[in-house]
Image (cartoon, rainbow, N blue to C red; front, side, top):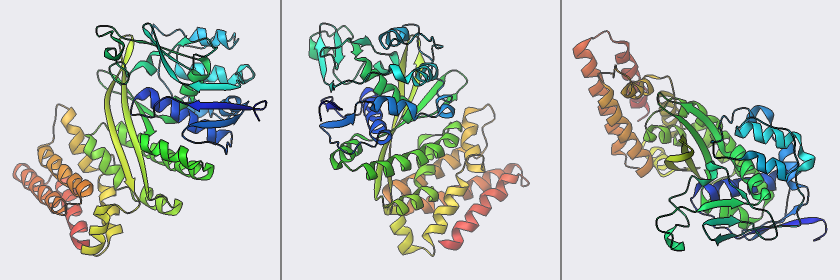
Length: 397
């Protein structure tokens, strides 16, 4: 089997760092795209052309949405020179990925890839045995203050460089492709969002060694990523974002149909900063087929599904509650915005902690919002919107 297969040895930690996530997302994507059936948390047996298959399967339309640029310090030409690719892309991730896809015959077919991290002088090396190691793109160095620290190498005042084999960079690029959700341009900065499986989910998927199960999880993750695009473009508080996901009836129904009890994910918010990148937020997301708050609704209300449907609808982007929260980032903050934020935080407490009082507090803050608006302008159309939400929920509660 050694003559026709590539052995990928997984000796790098599966942890919460961005680097680990991109590498392992690339591995999971490669397992799926090459229909590999022999894998575990220790090693994967691929056909030798697995990287070619992975890059051939990439969708141009999706690649075009990856608007991440390389920094001035990134030397992407060294990877292309190593692969003997003469085509020169623009210094963007989509440009590099497209060029590699278009020159897939140049992608190596190694006998062995050992994802082992070694420390050598002032560099961390990944898969360095018998291979050239190239400077990793700055995006993969975003964990420069976490993971293996300079303290452990007795280089307290210095940062470590990161060098990777061409194959590891190719896997990481696949991980970038498969995890990139969207890019949101704010007034002062650009934010790139990536959705990864949580470390414990990666361990479970690899240990199970079940290709069919892996594909189900990947499909579910894709559905959630599609739903996140609209949510993230609204730039609303994290509690609101999580509520939109956890109350999304389409996600809950899809999980039931797929036979998934739970899926653990992590959302990274990354932004360019000078010649490197910075992680702005890391948001854990866990979805359950039957969350605790749903069980409470089923026992204490007329129709749990209908309540979830109403809540999911009224929290959607473009609706009154979302607009009230968005007004915090404008010069014309809604008069009732503070009450709406309190209501959303109360609803979040109900959904996350299954504290039913949070649901009633949500309704209470909606009433307060109406009072504030009525005192200033009884004809404000937002009053009718908040009253409608109260009536619809009250009927089923």
